[in-house]
Image 1 (spheres, rainbow, N blue to C red):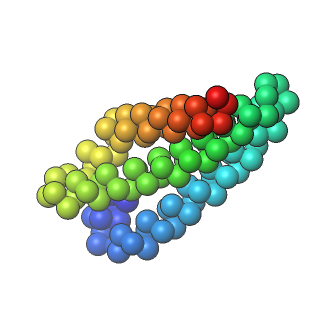
Image 2: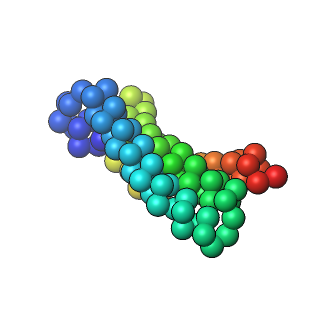
Length: 107
């Protein structure tokens, strides 16, 4: 995203393809996690993990694209949005997604 911003590439086209990639990756990883966790633990926990992996992958991709774009729009260096700041936000959102799903599905 940062490279695209510096080269003047249209952000919309990059966002669509990157979000699709994040969703596909999340679906594959969640699909792999479901049977593995289901065998060792419980089906409801397996569903929670699979959905959380899918959602977290999609959200992490969105944050990784949106944060540099937002910083660029604010006339700040978009590279600041690719390091620890982006990682911390992605991690917090991933935990929030997991615990929210766990509360809704398991309880």
